[in-house]
Length: 369
Image (spheres, helix red, strand yellow):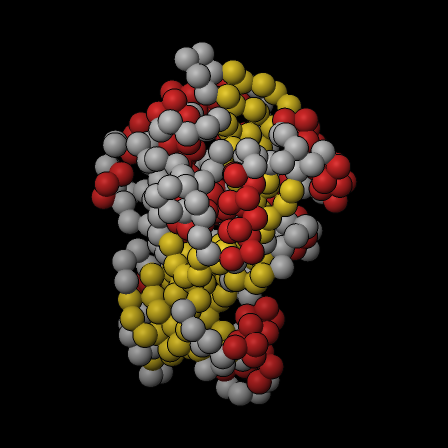
C-alpha cells in the first residue's frame, strides 16, 4: 500500500506534552467498525463497563531505561560530540544504538560517556567507554561496552537521560516528573527505550474495578525500541523494514490466554506492543504459544489477526507503522473517520495523550468481534 494513505493533518496544539491527572481521567474514543462505524466518547476509567467478565487484558510490563547518552568520540587527538540512543540489547556488554550525527563515527572508534575529567580517569564512577563495532543504515551502530551486565546497567542509569519521544523532547526538556509519568504503574522488566503508552492510563483504582468486574490481567514483555519513532521513508509499505525488538511470553500466560478464548472470553491488548507480541506468538489456528526472542512483525491492512480481539491504544503519528497497524485492525476508512472525529473533538494525541478502544473489524477475516 502507498504510505500516503496513512497520512493526516494534526494541529500542533493537539500534541500532549503532559499526561492528565489522574491517569484514568484521559478521554477514550470507542471505535466499533461496521458499515456505519460507531464512535463513542468515553474516558479510560469507563473500561470495566466496556468489557465483559471473562475477558483478559494483556499488558506489557517493560520498564523504560535512561537510554539517551552523550559521548565524546576519541580518534587520535581529535574528539567530537555524539548523542547515542540505545535501542536493542544484544548481549551483556552489547547494544545496538542510533547515533547522531552518525557520520562522525567509524568502526573501531572509542566513545567516552561522561565529562572530560572522567575521560582522563579522574572519576571512574562517572566514566563509561564503548567501541563502535559496525555501522548500519539510518544511523544504526553496534556498540561493545567496557562494562557488562548489572555494572553496565548501573552506569547507564547513572549517565543516561530519559528518552522522551522527539515530538515532546523538541518542545521541552525531560524533568523529574517524567521519571514517573513515562512509566506504567506495573513496569518491572527493564529494557525499553520507549514506554508502552497505552498502559499509562491505568491506576490502582482502575485495576481494582476491572478485577471486580471479572476482567483478568495477563502480562507479557516487549522491550520497545527507538525504532518505533523512526519515520517510514519508503513510498510503499512493502519497502519498509521494521527494527527487531525482544519479547517474552511465558507458558503460563499462553495457557491462560488460550483458556480465556476457549471459555468465550476476548483478548484485549493494551497497546500495540502487546498486540504485536501476541500476534508473533500465535499459531495459524489462533492458539498462543510461549515466545522468547526477537520480533520484527509489520502489520498493515490485509493482515489476518489470530490473537487480538480488542485493542486499547493511544493516537498515533501520521504515516507511522502504528497508524498502519490500527488501520489493519479496525479498517482504513474507519480509522480515518475516528481520527477526524478525535481531532475535531479536541482529543490529545501521542504518548501523553488520550486513548482509544478499538474493536477488530472481524468481517474481513471471519474471526469474532
